Structure formats: structure tokens, C-alpha cells
Image 1 (cartoon, helix red, strand yellow):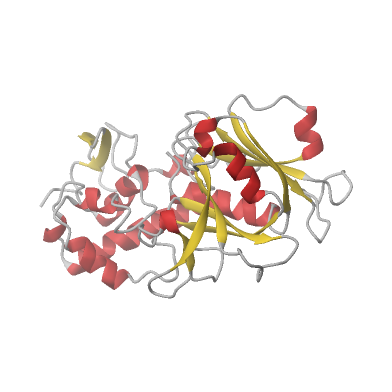
Image 2: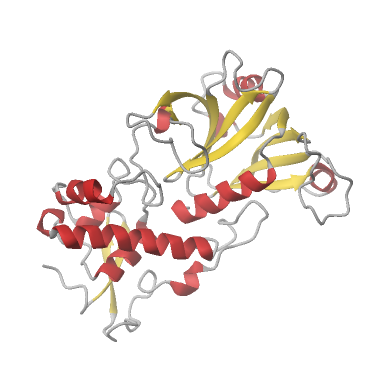
Length: 323
């Protein structure tokens, strides 16, 4: 499942390639993609067509594009909405120039397509491409397993007055994402407060890390890697962590996700790619996840795997002893 680094890689790609463009049309190929909208495909098309994509924002695994009325600008009545994107387990957002997209075969798992007119600068998708400046592009939502979705949503104020997420200064967040906590790469997150909240959870530390209402964006892979870095067993009860250990766990999670971002995320197959279709390669740097039976790079003891919430936990049998 795409986690924070994968979603942030997609957000950064959208910020580079689609901001400022106007939605000229919307095609929905699968109704499940718009299942959260009462009006389905028609509602998505009505609410997106004619809007300008102003900013690409992310909080945890949630991604949204801020919308403005293209004719009237950001101060227009009704401004204050977003296109919310959740990638689910296999969702991708792919950007291509329209001519290339229309000349080739459609992706077999294409679920929706946004037709985007050139922005005011007249730039093309690729500054080095041979096509004339200002070629329209398409933004394709591809989703093999159809757990992801697109939805327009109203924006609500953040309780603390800080930006809703990474990518825009607006103290606004889509209403349906307002319940999730800030993520560890959010400049507005307070690690001291978060560490106290982590120790206050009556659960194992890994389960607490995966609670998106506590801290968003940490998934199974990066939880295992963070706990390895912090030398904490995934089943250690969160209340038994010292204040220093709790903060170390959170700092380790932030460090591992920053490292994954540099590598473009973790791609085990063609499902997880950035907006140009390129896979990340952080999987080559994983210390414990998926390495059952291999020696720990720190102490040489074998990496163990245990069942966890219908998934798996991976940890070192020696340097992550349960306390």
C-alpha cells in the first residue's frame, strides 16, 4: 500500500506538472472511483470542469488539489473546495501530454481521466520535449484494485490555525480528512506533544504508530523500519516507553521516511510509481521488512517475522528485545 513517501512523491510530481492548469473535462471509467460522491461521475465532472488546480497538498497518505474558479480566481464565491485523492492500495496518478495519451492504448486499469488545458505560462509537460509549448495534458487515475477514490470536498479550518498539510500555506483541510493527525514531515507537528500522546496509548507501540488519528502517514513498512532504528520491539506496550524512547521512535520514523523520499519511495512492483511512471528504489535499503531469516545488518542476529493485524511485523531477534 502506498505510504507517506510514495504519496509525497506523487504530490511533488503534481506540483511540478499540473498546477495552474484548468480542468477542461472529466471522464470516469469506473463508478467505484467516485463512490463517495452522491452524484457519482456527473457530480465530479460538474464540480471540477472550469476550475484551476491551485496547489497540491498532502497530510499523511491523503492528497488533495486545491481548486479555484478559473474565471473568477481564488476570491470567487464557492472557492474553498478541493479534489481529494486517496490512492488506496494500488492507486497511481499519471501525467502525460494529451497527444501521446490519445495516440497510445489506454492503461488497462484506467479509472478516471482529467483533461487539463495549458496553464497561463504555456509550459508543456516536459520542458525538454519536442512538442509545442502549451500542449494540453491528461491526469490519469489508475487503480488496479479499485480501493482508491476521487472526491470533491469542502475545506474546513484547521483547529490550530496551521497549514492543513504540506504544499500550501492555507490553514484548511478537506472535511473528510480533518480527523487524521499531522504527519511526521509536517513542519507544524510538535514531537514533544506527539511523544506524550504515543505513551498514552494503551496498545503495542507498532499499533499506536499505525493509528492515523495519532500520527498520519506511517504504514506497515516504515513502522517496522522505524522501530528497528529505534531498537524497540513492535509489541512493546506504548505506555512502557520512556519519554526519550517515544521521541526516538518518532524521530526514527521521520528519518526513514525522509530517506525513502530521496529514493522516490518503495516500489515492489509496477503499482507504485510517480507521476511520470518511474518506480522508487528504497526497497533496496530496507533493514528488516521482508528480510525474514537474513542477518541483521547491525548485530548479525536473524530477522524474525510475526503475524500482526493480518499482516506481518519484521524485527531483529537480538537488538529489538521486548521489554
